[in-house]
Image (cartoon, rainbow over all chains, first blue to last red; front, side, top):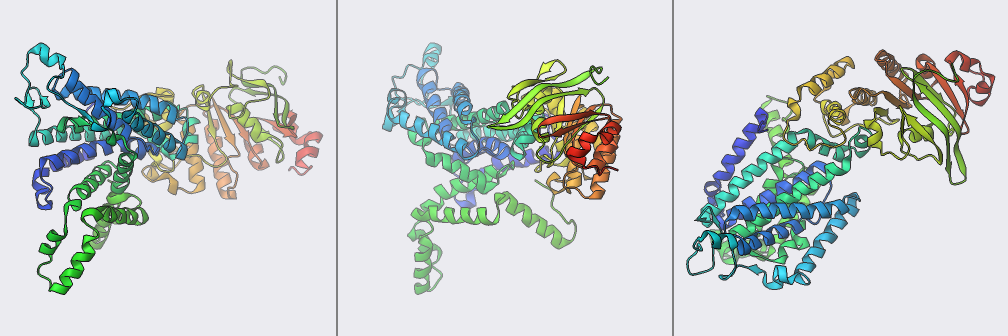
Length: 377
Length: 257
């Protein structure tokens, strides 16, 4: 059950090392603070799950933010009603998002191609609107679902556990230890590594082979005796569960849930992450998630003063020109940079950053004259 | 013998098919004997492909029924029909072009072993030794073992056809349907395909072959049915068919050697 091929074991080990060492290698990029690294890990989990659907079966869901939102709301409700412990919160997030995915997938998978995408988008927008209107008692509308000192927290109350966090609001905890800072990051990191492992297992399994068959040739699949519908539905539910888990983790690291997590922009974001990194590859979606989160959080914070400081060594006139031009691409303009990057990648590297890397490796190897072709990664 | 042959695997009884006002098939009564290669021939537009699609469940007949080994096929989904033991080779090879040659052959074996759906997530494809061995043997038999790790989309048309045959054979079907297996092939590829089909004849499975090429038909078939304008005008041994004046008139134009 835990078997991996030799190659996959090495990949997993490298991946785990890279994730655990994040605080070290992210420092030069100015991104080594826990809040951001938590997001890196969480969105990577989201992207890994999304890739199981989009990467393996080729079905493009435009509504996965709905599951992210469901996961967040569920986790906060678990904090409010049951306990501040994160384990039940994450279990409920994953399971409930899975049930949601089962229902939405059941209907959406009756169509393929663009109609499938539109159906998922419609369901997600519906969830988003409902969260702001009819479901306000559950979601607390625009304010967002917040913790309160007087929440029942039945299990905590029954156990007589004193609320962690002292006089202020209670804080999520793992078996009694408050989830903050680096502890929060390492929880997310551990789950990310587990998610990567599960994704490896699925990629290498007969189930994964069937999903790839669906992407490759549906006609051959059905005339080969596969019932494609349950395979698709299973992939949809699994990816929905990953999204729910990610949503739950967002609430664990910051116990508030708002409907904006269900917006279509969030759904679009995960599509961008997956394509940017490399659809259908193991590591691509993770890299895509990191690049986009980095842009959103670091690139967007660069302002004119920082640019001025950086280009101080240039003569005055030139410095002004350089700073004026570059300032359009950073800060508020980070979307512009990301957009250009995305266009370039889709045009020239349809396989995403991973394909770019493979081409580079192949070229270097050819240059050395050792091996003509790079092995697939 | 023609009236009540032993061991009928497939029986299309009284099948009619209309497309709007057009009669594509009428009064079809076709019996396929176990272990035999049965060819269906006929001029273009005679209804050969329609008949095959009715058998495979892709098209529902207007009336009549197709019975396979005691089970009525009408109304069943394609994957259910496959699970009963019918595999199909298409006119244009349908393979998994994004997968390796070996995975192409392994996937159908999983469908045979695990049924139409199984959440087989925690096993590793490469460690399914039985299926892997069988797939590799088959590829060896068909001279494709060296290419087992190649992308199957890059194969030549003849190799794709061979691969598709392997994908069907690994399922050990009781009935193999071949829709113009040599369509669009060069003489050389056609001859290799005939050799292949001869080879699998020894495996003793029942085959229905739809074919244009008389050379192919007369080198392979045990029995031939001739379709013209949606009706079976003759059915019998190759020798009888060759000499049947109605057949010569309708299709062969008296030009059979």
